[in-house]
Length: 157
Ligand code: HEC
Ligand code: HEC
Image (tube, rainbow, N blue to C red; front, side):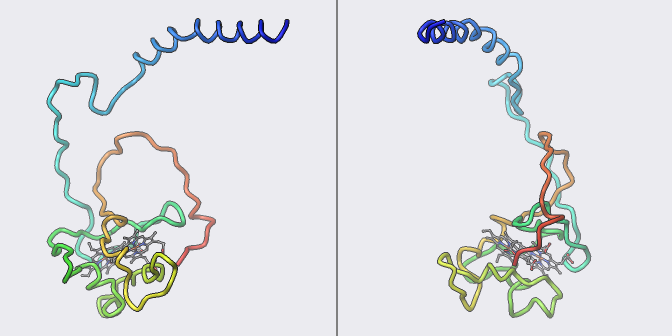
């Protein structure tokens, strides 16, 4: 068979397989919201975070070595993080962590974006909860078979 005939056959095959693919697609696609786009969204039930006040629980095992550890304690009732006040740093910052027996913020949190060590926690780390999240006891929305590397990798500082 010459080259152009092979290409032609390949294109024909592609065209013929299209409708079957499209059909399969529509019957299989499932959104979390469901098929009826006009239906009013149901708000998920409100859940409170697991964990009691800080100081009474073990850290949650990490899944992969560079993961920001999740927050094992409750965070309800803490003040908002503002320019003047950061309740997380009040316990996890270098000044106080020993007194309240909290894990100190990681050394990486003192580096600026150029890798230079600063005297205090970098502004880039000020909004702790953009990386560290509290936990709720809820069923995962989608399945997940991710296997982390934390069992073998050394913990990074
Ligand atoms: C009153 C002190 C206190 C405050 C406020 C506090 N923490 Fe904690 N945190 C702790 C203690 C103590 C632990 C150790 C686990 C425990 O006993 O609950 C901890 C554990 C953690 C851990 C787990 C670290 C690891 O290695 O697994 C993270 C992450 C964390 N806190 C983040 C935060 C963030 C973010 C905030 C602000 C929203 C916050 N904490 C506010 C005291 C505090
Ligand atoms: C940009 C994402 C990010 C932000 C923002 C951030 N962290 Fe982290 N944090 C991490 C990661 C990633 C780790 C684990 C790797 C490491 O040690 O750097 C970590 C580790 C920690 C640990 C565990 C330290 C240890 O020795 O095991 C504590 C405690 C912590 N962070 C507290 C905080 C607090 C408090 C804030 C806010 C002032 C904060 N982090 C802001 C990403 C972040």
